[in-house]
Length: 332
Image (cartoon, one colour):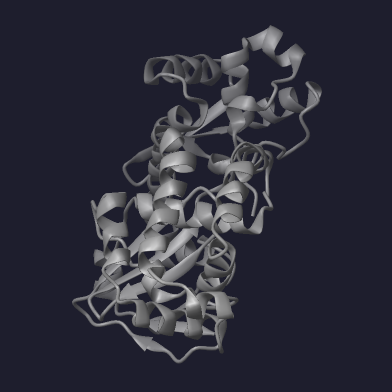
């Protein structure tokens, strides 16, 4: 298994941060796999997969380059640098273009675990072509949605931070993605791959970066910066504003208020609800007050955050409206 040895001070100083580059690389992986895990991803693929396939058809290097770069258990270092706090997509991707072609090929051989396809051995400008591909993915398939995705990712960070206050770091690390687990005694299992343990220096920067696709990986920059990229909470990643609300429930509560109620099978903050629904802060706050007064929701405090969740009465109302128990809750 991939094991990081982390002291408690390093873990206490760690932080959640946004990375437009990580979101872009995860989206590239999704385009390469061409398989969505939920309706929001599937619709996104229907919109953007034809453009990606046209791009790949025009350049025979694209498909083998991405296939080699993502590998089976190792991502080529040069194509996925570790983002820094506050770094823009353009700043991160510029570091991809600074890599020497021979170094890029060496990284790709590591990720594929052997010789490269002949087309990659012969290809010129591999780093520049990687930059061009990543820039296309960002410009055409991520940036048009970035404001909404940013709100969703920020909401995830609020939820994770609240989770630290509620259950400690161990519970949060266990839930990041399949394969992550706090082992105690400074041991953090970051994946199930059989790699030698890595000792994280006490002064190293440890970052946690959510992305909306169901992708994840770990990376590091020298010995001073480490990152865990993980898929954000399923209830946030889904495109809920396109999910129909049962007609009877909408007639009773109003469509917007009914949508808020259906989402709250998992505790969420006002900020998260704003991110997921796209409704304004004032509107969400008004809906929460009405639902609280009706006894359909209850408040829970988690650290400095206030979370809302359905009561038993709220669950009964949703079941009566045809929404099964837990249907709007978090997916693993």
